[in-house]
Image (cartoon, rainbow, N blue to C red):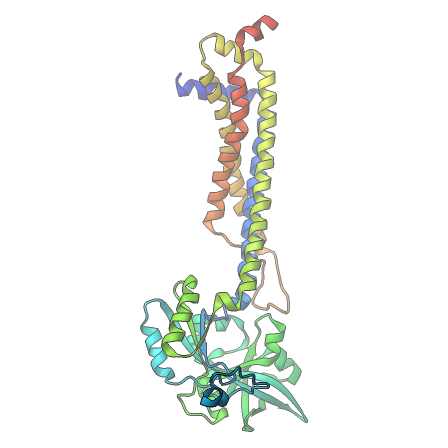
Length: 418
């Protein structure tokens, strides 16, 4: 049988039951709209929440861990070499925090094709002297340009100019620390290091990551300023931060580079495993809800086609009596189901995109996230592809079983019954 005739009959049957056809297409449209809007919003929210931490976290961090010396004197004595030695209250050894030969390590990392960028860092524990009170904090010495390039540093500087850090004795305070000290931009604050060195720093801006505990204690200055505060030479570096081209390579490369350079290395997956778990769970819930909507709409199409077959038994019997095969009848009703799926799916994708645009314009302002002005939305093309493909699959199976039922109708029994 010609497909053009099958399409013409399917169209006639749909127009004969226009109200039910529109209801079925609307169900598919609504499901696809909610599927796209839900996934776009939830994954945009996931990206924002993870970005609060992961954007500021290196894929690999190299440092020197402070730990007890594994080579205790008693273990090196021949007198006790065959004995079980139990040592209590072992104190950490006097080891250097600075990374030895840091310039060569940074140069080697930058030459590696798997590495996107490298940023040195110094972490210094300090006291902010506010009148007669000393507030504990951490000043991170950073390479300003590298930090902006690799870790979106500028996105979190809410006031002031991050480039002012290149000036000697300038500091960008965490917003929580600045509020506790009542320090305005341009003020000069006094800082005392753990070694007893006391310096005066000019406030160049405020930093706000959205994590209150982090912003209460962390501040930023240039590497040269922190080296001067600590009285250390220009080669003094305590951390080397690495961003990779492929995040999944972080665990094996951390182990590889740690063994090569002989220093401790942490990878982002190990340090922030809880964030990845939370993201996966939220994404799974989003997909589950969206797919449930599509399945429900599929049952709606199934019921409508079943009713259509029951009401059109005479028509089906006549079609088979004049030469239409069971396969032709099957194709007619599957064509109806797929047409409903295509029309509803296309409209659903359009309205889903429009819904995402509306969500993207809804104000979302909170003091904890000053850089976020509207609700985050992810416009990834894969959500639209998944929604479109799944709508076709759902509607196909919703039409398959009623079509098989229609194709098995015996025209003789129907006509005899009439």
